[in-house]
Image (cartoon, rainbow, N blue to C red; front, side, top):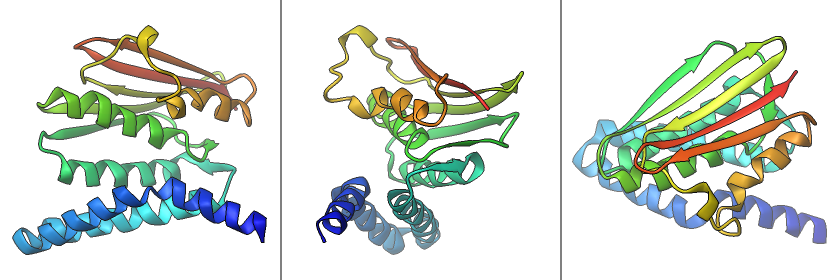
Length: 194
């Protein structure tokens, strides 16, 4: 019983109820003013929510196309909600690999929330994959406001710094490199051998 309560708490924590209520309010509003956009956002939200629930109940590796599908739904919802346009660019040279649940989306979410939204003009996020000699490289890059990596409060930004730890649970040689320049943007590179 105690284990079930803990599992339920983790699922709710990952779903972030406040975010869900905001999205539902936006969907309701869009259905009144632009039904086609409302329907699109509802479909994206459904895909995102399904992915979040599945991810919360599963704590292992997932194929990259499926993992990014959930992340894409999140990005598309944010595109509708954003006051400034968000452009998504993908460059996938290789997709036949698996990654742990909960690695890509927190990085994309931070790029949007702290990089692009703070920019207050059009912003671009690029997600790329490649492989060379069995080493996979996944890159998440934004052209947002950037930050001084030495001044980040690691207790408040814990989820982005937990990515390497999470990757190493499955790929002991995994490396995560953050590179950010103020007023230029942020680039996160994840490398691991398959």
